[in-house]
Length: 500
Image 1 (cartoon, rainbow, N blue to C red):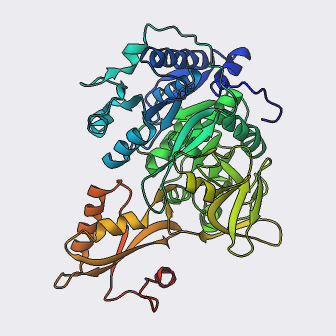
Image 2 (image 1 turned 90 degrees about the horizontal axis):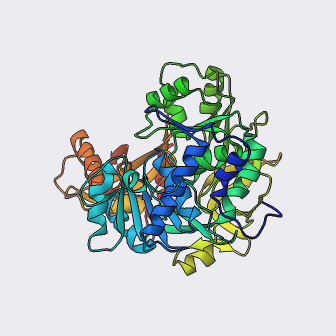
């Protein structure tokens, strides 16, 4: 967004389409049969903005979004920014404890949630004062979003925000503690559209996008909102879980030209019967490393490569990527135009700089100073650069895992496992099984406990009840002892090596 005006509001991404005469074009098609034009979406966003004003929301105050991928998400996200508020989308599959944290930490004045999630949000709010709006239905204790905005004006001038004002937050999990609010600015979205979307995707008005990764995630937000809207393309939104057969069914039916997913799902889709993906001109993968064998098998089956890259919540989207026609399997490619990368000689940690970097972590001053070092962001990923300039992933600096594109904290899982009466000690590591990233728990049982499949199933159920639904060990190994240093620290690297 070089040379852009200082006064800028990210919701103007819709106005450009209206000015270009695309008001009657479909911006959104849903798997439930709903079709929303750019003019209709702009009107819905304006109505959400008016409603938030009526509810007393002031510029820069936060609006929590707990929404699946339905038209309510882009209308709420863009409508909040349009009136100067700061939308905060979070994972609708998260747990009660985190929803309470999001409300407290963001001091959200309003929370907009899907009808199925509203009882949990009511409980999470407790005695708090956030006004609750329910989307896609009605329930007690919340104002219906669609009904409340129905009679409000369909036009709203964008707030006179500065390009460097806070625009939206995304929450990012760490190896310890509660998720951190990542503060992005109004110009960040436009920067990723001008760089990654233009150079790597070469996205245009004629494209149709479909992302199995949801809109609350930085990767999904670009794939299925900012990138298509930036050029007047059409996006396919699918609420509910994107299982491998469902993802392929949607792709075959709605014929996207750009198909975004994550390595684990690409791998699992290869176990399904082939479908017609002849509409797809490019598949894109991110969020965790893509196994070369998966890319090879996918291209053999569907005749289109998977273009793999690396991004982060803090940088908003992908900053290092392979290119269509220049895919080096087993690498994350080369820097995207507009981004610079360097690898620390002593540690191998990857640093990146580019103008989509977040302003900081909300109320996390020390964390911000450690991770955002001048113009550079410390990614926490270890990389090396091969002789041809391609970046090769070599692991994390901490013990965090990426499974299915979502962060998983081994520490949280270990804490939960060791609360089980049959467990004396547990260590959680990431392993690769049949070209997919999986979670493995290495467990020492309490004295007298049987080590069998029934206990393994019990431990999985135990984790699912106490953590997010995807935070459980796919594999459980029972051992008599763990490898340790002379000071007693568990040598996780030995467990990972033994699992290879």
